[in-house]
Image 1 (cartoon, rainbow, N blue to C red):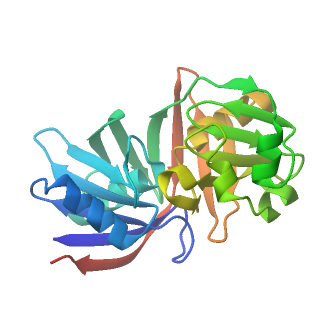
Image 2: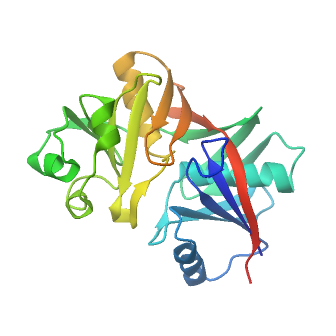
Length: 257
């Protein structure tokens, strides 16, 4: 079985958010997929099986299966459209989050996702203790978004994973207004056995939606300020959906025995 390592949301290796992509003829045991995800020790390993209509796609962190992953969806589309269907312009995936379509547009791969209802919640002392700085606002959707006064705070923070485990949200995001981009963010995921997700596509279904409303614009260029870093191009469609685009680059192809 071939396994591809792809760096999405970048055009340079060793940047973006590395994902493993396994294209298979049939589904193995779920325990085996969990073991391979743990062996890879990447934030996400994607497993793909071709069906009559499109492909079935599942995502695993080193600790659990998840219902949505943006960067591994981009990586999966990159693999299918470059190594399995190079003449195709788009690919459809059947997932736990429904049907996901990825369209190739030049060097970008455009994904179409749902947005989530966002509600403002009180900023707490627990949030301040976990992040090491007090947010000026807190927003809760599927994940927690903590808004900080400036990008420098977000870029330099060193949050406490054990304290992050105790506050709201599946993923705890820190974000602020950007300078060269519309916003700067980081995503911390100890509840998913990931200390920090280098570039989190699914989190930007909420982060970009929030900044779109704050900045009164439907196109958001987002920068993820992890050590690897990456750029996401987000377009809010206004019908409960968002398009998130990014580049991708191949790092390795290996054979799993």
